[in-house]
Length: 247
Image (cartoon, rainbow, N blue to C red):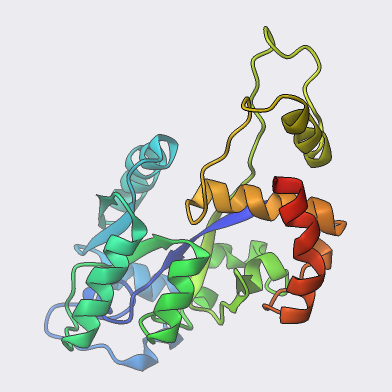
């Protein structure tokens, strides 16, 4: 299946990690902070606390932050606090409300977002941009890869950084299914041959939306056939086969 990236965002409503929270006591930081070296950034960050807001229902993600990232940040003198939310929109609501109120010292330093919330925040000018080029490991990321350069059709423009890649996997009971399908077309064929035994969450649920996109990739001849930006002509041409497959 087509992979997806999980991404991290710096809200502009709170310039904590990139600006204010990285300032040494008694100093101020302006937009020129983007010109700092990484060593200057880590030195200024010592003693600071970063609140990472993220979906709390992913146990593996929670464990990674708690068991790997938090100790690593502590070695640099930074306290990383994971703030679990039931829905990323809860973080978005907080960010947009604080931005509307003119707050520069809000509650959200970093947030793990999906494409929908990223687009909402970008339209509201809620993200701190231009900071990703300062990350040392960004050299391992292909900046022109559409998977990196765009998030659900929205140009990233240095406003978010990928932090891991994930793929969806078909899980089945071998005691019940001796020969599982090995392709999306096979999954659809199996579902039609076994009515009532295959379900998926209805969009806009994240997993359900991903499944529908995977079906669209399959019925369209591959994800390369899908425009990065919404195109009404392509939608009218490609979706009839999608809806037919999902009946």
